[in-house]
Image 1 (cartoon, one colour):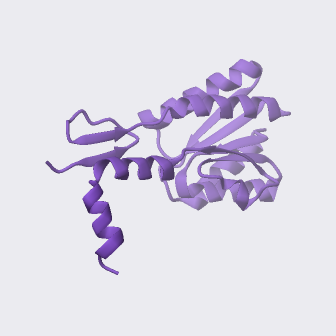
Image 2 (cartoon, rainbow, N blue to C red):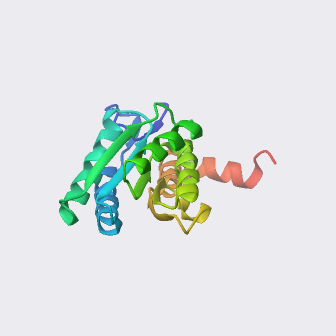
Length: 174
């Protein structure tokens, strides 16, 4: 009777709570915002890996971009890492050199490389999952917030019994 929770994928088993987000819908809004802000009609995205999850994300950005600015083009580069700050920065600088003036950072910890490039070169960027604008509000215009904290709390509340919660908060290890 062990219960499990998994994020960002679906497992069809009775003891697994799959938590999936409609990231493509939020990405649509991100793409629309990028399309409204760009002055060069070239925008970019630096992502970690070309896998279905991030392909849905890029499709959402592309559709939002096309909805508000059909002339704009989206450049997509993959860093092949969720942590490689230097590689993400290199890719953002390459996109900027090719005319991108708004670049979405979707590379996990690598986002900080995109943010650093934006600070150095003066282009706009966007973060994801949490409010990343706090790192550089002058250049990070948007953050696609996922709400992992809320869904994690709700999931733990559903997966744990009332007695277990009382044990941990009342007389559990201190």
